[in-house]
Length: 630
Image (tube, rainbow, N blue to C red):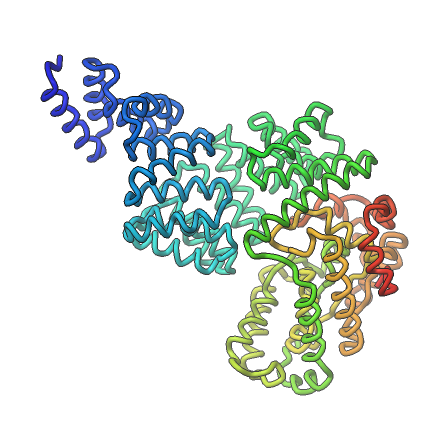
């Protein structure tokens, strides 16, 4: 039994020393001994709450630290630690208030600034989080956690290069941070540094093999690398380690959807909703793989998510698109459009906060530049560049114009493989520019061009698996067909055409997020589509026999004639399996995964008419150019 203030202080001092040394059991025993003598001793309550937090019991931590705060309301550390505990139980606004109070009481406390940055990152206030992390680093340059918070904020702002540097700074200070390695890997992947990303993931998993979040992050990166089998295995590992982790089940559902295993995917998404009824991603997944999946009660919960200001913007956006899909499916088009419009408006806000927006004037000028650069004179000058390979087939156009469908049809042929949407051609174009600094494209080195053509083919061969043709279906390669044609004069280009009214509407109804900033506004969709149309007209004029127009409406209305024409264009013998493309067993990672595994249907043709009264501005812009189909 403690007998006085001296004994109490001595025990607390000893307990704190053991706590700092990492001996939580010994420290806890001493804190409890103090509380037996003085049940409301605030320092013991506070530090016992910190131990609870360290052990993962954030709820207990909130209770203990809150009691300590009643006795010591002006101690910065107590506010700061309570903020961390409140964040862990999802009470972010309360956490924010205590983090700010900690800084008000102790403005020189770097940890308090870093804790504030973490909460602000959770709330997606990335600009404020960046400033808070800078304050922390200014006060404590060697605090790895502060550099990590800065990296997260920079990722949120879309400043990936700077985020990578911040993660590197954190790892230099503390190399054995599995969670930081995993997040750094995600940034590296987005910076097209795939090998480095997988090295980071592997090290993270080796440091903490029983952490399901690390396996989940690895699965997501493998999916972005088009390794669906690897992503599925990693997602199953995450589920085995944490059967109550909704994100793991959602990733599993996404993998199964990509493989066409829709029933099992639906079960995975339903498991997500059992664990977390607020998961808008799971509702979206169900809408893709099981069209009649959402019950009236589930629909009520889904639409309720859209209007919840306490949810992060990303969840509300996902919920809005999922609700739009459901009402579109049942034919309530006015309600559907309202949800799509709200989801796009919120997406637009988040993009603008990151400095991301579609500039139609700049886009128009970029199309002008491509047309002015890739002229007959350019192709005459580039005559020595070419690699004679006929392996590549480029399917290009606007997103949602049918590139996935065409790839699926052609990949059903025994001599054709599909590599999905890769950024390989874009990487080649960027490397050519770097290797020819200050030189116009027409003056690029033939040696450099041949080297980059070889590098592209080497990557394509990994997808070919013995096929004579490989379809690269990245729609935005429409901006790079001049480079592709110069590097591969034997390659074939498929220009995908679809009624621009349907194309624009379909883009507006898909949650592209950062990938396509134009998609959040119907007028921007129209400007983008008109520019792509103008560019494709240029490619027809200068590439002539190297390109083939493929019209979506003709393809779905007379599939056999159009598919035979496609196969003949590639110089291949006819195979009837191309007509049963929906049975082809191959991964599909785009939003069209369900559609292209169905027999050909025509219900998407003229779909814009169902929403015509909401499309007046877009229709007027297209009408002014007298353009519907390309």
